Length: 264
Image 1 (cartoon, rainbow, N blue to C red):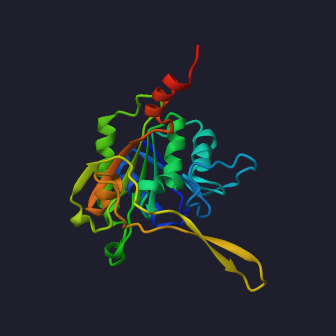
Image 2: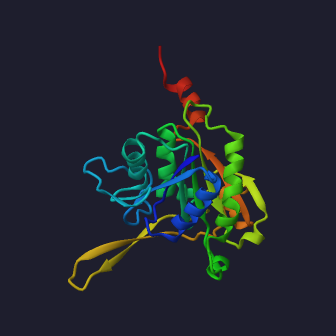
């Protein structure tokens, strides 16, 4: 199996090293792991692509490349250039340092990389490690992802369903809970949730030269969330698995509006 890995924390991020180990185990002795990852951190860029300027790409070693772009740029670079003659069988994005559950999904470059792979017709999985007080005490805060990731990816590959009911290719979003590997209670297939009262905000900052800047601030990651959602599962020490598709249409409202607004 030929696996492409990318992330949004950058080519030197410890989570990418964890993902390389996971991918190597999944690929097997005769497999290949290719890395095309951002040269610099790209957290929060979602599914952004560098449409109005070129992306510099550099080969750092065998099957290892850094691109000055977003995770989606990296997936495009791999498919259309680096791996053009031998495309990947699977794309893995992560392991993100921090969760991509709940509303975080909409901002996540990790999820954006997996989404681009799905739009390109490839099986893809985003992986993120929820961080907290218990992971901070570990020598390896990615322990839960490292230990449980290979098994879960193999299960998804054996399941083999990468098509949705709306003619979009599925991708999967996996979040590992903020605990050590032995404390993980299992896996929950859960919908994307929402933390109550959590919003991104900005905080003004004045530099010594008098210029005014704004820092973007996130909200509490332990706030109460939608019951039985991905966030809820993670906070109860379960791995969350969410099937997703690159389609933001609200199909319930679509059907209702047709009866109200369409004429003729």
